[in-house]
Length: 371
Image (cartoon, rainbow, N blue to C red; front, side, top):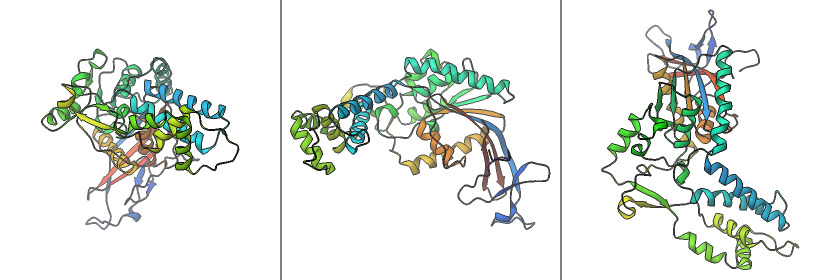
């Protein structure tokens, strides 16, 4: 929110400015439009104006494991005499995190602490409603298990929860960011009231195409473990790859840290994906999807505007339950907050969003974080 309490003006690529009209409402400025109607000016009409709650899922099991792995790697290198901010420590922590995510089962659930902490998120929303905010009458949630569990705990007994593929986490190829098949989700009592028609249809339509089974380590893994069996050889390999200076009085990297460094250097975060024919009749992984970079993710996040425009016809407040990377790109792109920080687990943020259309089909968005 701006210093004077007005809504932030958001300009998407190719958009015009917005201004406050005489009646106090926010409307796009005609001055910035290059397309004119028959009357000489582009005519904009308000299509949706709603309050949007964005919620990151609670702490999941893989979040706990990656934090523990990074801390273990850090302690190991500090004990070996390395500076806390050295490149070796950073590299080892990165490798430790990737190693944990690499070995993680697909679609991990919330941790025990994550489930318990969501009581705070639920109370946060209750306090906002008590303060005058409209309660979300529609909840849209990512199809990953941790997000669906979050929606079930934050909005217990809510009658309008819909699972939408567009809200999934960035497609990294990691097992933790791969969702379960719809057939395994629809039978769970926790999600019995959720509308999963979109992912059921998606998985069903892809059944005749080649699909993937559980993630498996690629052939690089055993080679790295073999190389790391000799601590000195592993340390030497790491020194060579990162250009570490010799003779500086540093103690050799211990075996565990060397293994972690080598894993990062050799790209152990990649996957060998097996199809169902070679793995048996697996139902844990959905059909294969292309990996995404940040630009692609922001493009997908922009599709949320379509959802908001659609649901804004019947709802004045909507909740989106999703993930760290996805919500960051949603805020920094479509919602116009380029410097937005990443959401913490279970964090709740609230936006006021107005969407306008003109006769040419162009869209303008006015958005402001209000809580």
